[in-house]
Length: 400
Image (cartoon, one colour):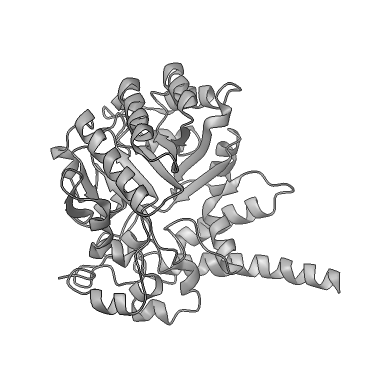
């Protein structure tokens, strides 16, 4: 069995004083289908095709069962807040009525002492005034996935019939970023494309005045390498792309927007903790519920192999504490103890955290490997460390 399955010594972990951290972020797959067919999508175009057997939309019965399990988890662990992410597929395909029902059901179920924070990630094609009124009324923060300018977006974020999607995405974004709905604009998400110019992409996204932008590495691993990430580790194409972006962002005369990857790396270099799973060793507290009620690990694992995200658990019969004992969840909560020898001996392992867990997969050894992006992460983190180190030294000299 590949690590961590059959490998994590439960008694040893308990004896070390380690205890699981309760889940605080619940990703609800309210709709399992999508109106786009993005070329890099890990759900529809990579190894795991389990979406085909999922119900299209989450039923009211499954919504109620999930809300009950979240409420149980919040009470048991005295959680002050839980974050519920409405996700897909494309969550807006679920329709305004179902989304309204989901939010109402959760707020009714969760105990009064626990605040429920909602967000939604969408391609914005269906982001109508009615949808935005619903989000505004419930205080749902809306994030939009967009890949930059016309050429890049329309080449990769296409409709299922192959037609372009940018015009409708821009129309939805224009509504969201208008004065009436601006307060619920959560930010933008962009998957890195090596064929694009990083500064051009960044500035095209900056035109929407986003509060934050997430630049994501395309999902891949040691079996199926990401586009452009070859075997020659002297090449660092993703670091080169990101360093150009970092230098443009970091050198700006004023703060333009939060770029989460860079903000988290800087925080870690300065001795802080990461708020995201992609870097650092902060325990993951994210769990996914599919449209049929299956409890799963982070769904980016679907890029590794068929069933990689599965836990075998279901909201009808299992509570979320059962998921906390699942080896895949434990592996993403034990920090440096989950890293292999190569990572443990690396001087920046507490910053990169071994890389994003799904990107560590290698057949035979499972997830106890460094990230397939290891050369890029090392180069990028070193570059950022050099830049901020020089600025801190200059600041120190000015105060002497």
